[in-house]
Image (cartoon, rainbow, N blue to C red):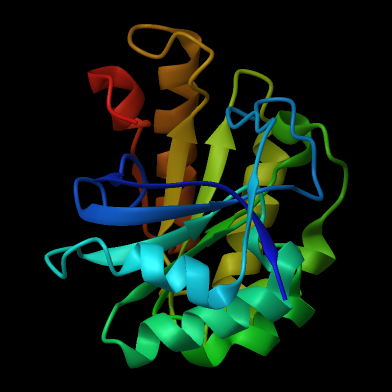
Length: 225
């Protein structure tokens, strides 16, 4: 059993609710989506067996907040992911899974060994990926067995009706889940139309009874990997 791993590195979490926490990042190669705003262009990987990857993980100290299994899309390699998650969990690490929120069946296979899930909601007008609502609903239903928060990339093209649809989904499935509104890193944020749109979406979230917050990708602003 081998997995394609693009990189393993220690850094701080640069986005979402765990912004600033020290994490070990295990970046899986390959994704089932091709979002127009994607900022993770992977062109190489190394193959690892579970014990090889676990051995490398153990080189890092236990002062870490958690291990971020990210990508790409880690759940594309669910059999391997379950194996390594079990190993890290049994060794006392906290497992943090970042996912595009599509592969709910694969999430069911690994959910027992995950502590925190950072789930994307891909809004069609932003991502260019079409209607993914049914996948996101099923994924959130499974993810809600554990701690989960959601992230949506907001662009100048993001449609208000799609934001309302996302908020309805959250309200129906897991009203306690926080939605992170994340400005597109390729667009001007401060003083521009994007900031105005984000503030409007935050107000709409409040109307829907869903907790939201605006958090840019800070690691890009400060030059941290």
